[in-house]
Image 1 (cartoon, rainbow over the protein chains, first blue to last red):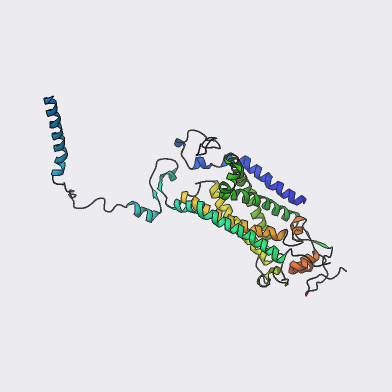
Image 2 (cartoon, one colour):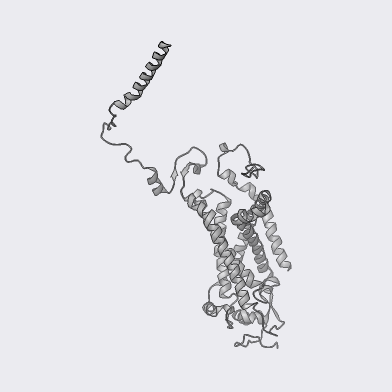
Length: 56
Length: 343
């Protein structure tokens, strides 16, 4: 059981390490798929604001 | 009043004449080129370009050259795949696997050891590093599978239950988990390949193993080496599928770095298709390693298995280990596969 937990912990640890380094090494989709002239600024995580549902 | 009425009539008459004049003139015929040739006759039209290139692309001065793609009709096929075919194929394959495993469990029950078969003598089947690699890869795969299925089924199944805002938050974290845990998964695929490739090369026991139904159907107990033919099938599927998943996943993680939009869509076809197939395969692997077969979990849990279990399922491997002097095992009764009593 110790090895099972160690395996889970190792996966999480590598995932966190990648999470700390990867964002600076890659270009997210919102940058890769558009040019800077079409962007006002970093759109953040939600591109259309908090209330995006079409029925509202 | 009279001059005003006359002026109005005159203006109507003039307007009518102006409108009628072009219609009364003979139509002007297109003047042929002085050289007698049509300069646009040889130029490619839209349909020809699409047939030749598969897309319409011009030149742009933007740093992103892919922005010059005007039409890419393959995108419609991709959208049809992503929104219609993939959810159906994925749902059918995964549900069919679950139903098949449940039916097999009802038919066969748990594959148990015989009464009093356990010898109490344990042998090492997987060392700590092998088990660490397995569980690291398994953890990553489970998270990747759940977050990957969320891409396909989340908005259809979860969003109506969770609500749009909660689903958006969950999906964002699932995406982070997918992007970040892909790396220990890729590392695990490399390590598993290095650790186990030698024992997964096809050998003389594989075809008889399949003919005997792997011991899962009927009462025959086929001989196998360290890994039986079914395990080899899982190994090569995971390694080759893992390579395809890793390569296509990296293309998606670094959008447009090496591929254009069409290439990204092909990477999506591969990533989603192989991913669904691997999930179905691993469901079978989890079943047989847990509730499907008594004693199977111990191999990856503690690393140790009972000698009689090893003799029953991997007799050739046990005898090979005994010949190398790695385990002290008395000669086996080959007919029953049961180890002789300890000396």
